[in-house]
Image 1 (cartoon, rainbow, N blue to C red):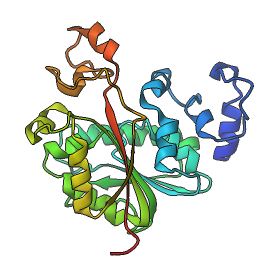
Image 2 (cartoon, rainbow, N blue to C red):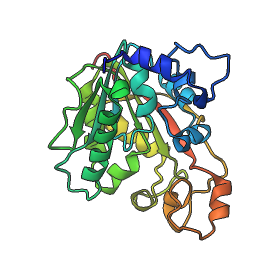
Image 3 (cartoon, one colour):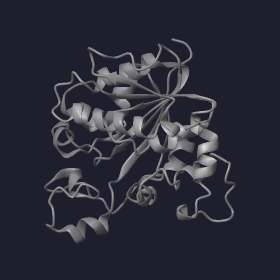
Image 4 (cartoon, rainbow, N blue to C red):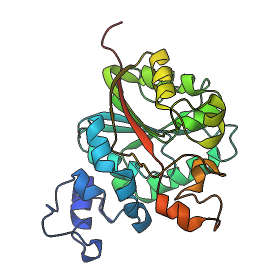
Length: 276
């Protein structure tokens, strides 16, 4: 079968009647507005747009089509589905995923699932470059000082749990060019929450994220309440995973957690200084 370009593929893909786009869309425009509802995304992932606010988040970070992007630990690729095709024609996309050599019992499985997705939908993800991140052993997630922007979504708590948060931020710093942007979305703990809370609940204070970023060399630029959820009081038996979509407690108080919705999240923007 003759191969087609990414732009042609998505232009054709988006006109299928099953996609359900309104007539106001330009079918050949790979805009964020088109991509978040495109048929290459599952209905379950599309349904979470209203909780994760991808357009507002990516615009706040300053994502542009011609950028070299690093997405850090993309898991199954919820954001990859949007960002990778957006920058495919003019920019570059690096997915800094788990290392197959990681000691984490779920790392290899997560990496394998992501790789299978990239391969199965090569028309969309054929230009994605997968790198491995496992500080301090594997830290070259893009050519040094080559990336315009690095982004991580709801991962900082995992690094705190293994005591490697600074090593991760130093890895992002090395990959970004001077003036490059680091965007962080993370479950937000109550101000003053202890490190013990952050190690067990999945929630992290804004002050601690800013502290770690500063230690790695970043300067804080701005914050946004795009992903805020005032209904989230942050204190649950199963931590942040009590809330959707995880529902760690199963049917226990499920309606209550559904009514709360997804977590309250900080959205922070940092920059790598242009000079020391």
